[in-house]
Image 1: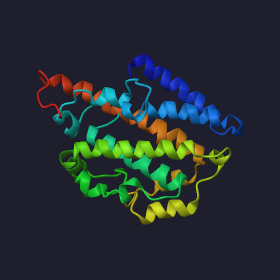
Image 2: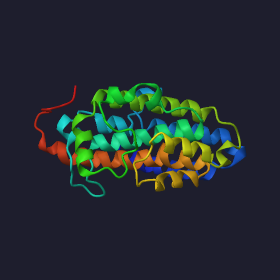
Image 3: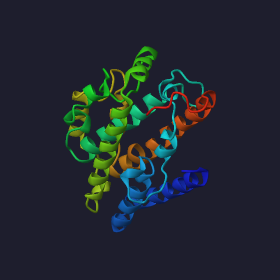
Image 4: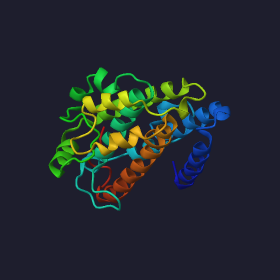
Length: 238
């Protein structure tokens, strides 16, 4: 996904923003969402064959680049590991619980053990020690597998939504369910309040698309800066 494709993604997201709440444009909005969303996960998520933003990020990424924390790039000091964890946890929570009133993929797939992490929340408000711990110890392959399962389920959920549902407000009982399940760290309840103020279409526009795009771009800037320090692909994750 080159610079021109990223510009086009932004233009299409503006178009999606104009369609998502229009009941008579429901099918068009879903089709555009699926196209936008596919570009934010690995290419096997969609049969289009287009190189995605995630493909670009993961291509020949050295392990120390994935795990390095803190980093010094504009807008973040967190690791690529943290960014991928953060966007995947939020997509899982908002799409599965808030949109579809089902359990998180994280909870039903034993992902905490597979990922080898001690955290279940979104990653907001983590201490430096916690981010360093996650960055060092998270299982890379499991994280990518978890991302794929979350993205696949998101596409199923959104594709099944009916005209008018994007205009519905988030159900407060679903917000409470996330809170009860430790979705956010203590002191970060503002995030639940933010989600609770949204219509379902608003969650499509931010956590499921724009949020992923922003963090993947941050991760890519980290990679581009740190990867210059590697020589001949040494340390690549296999």
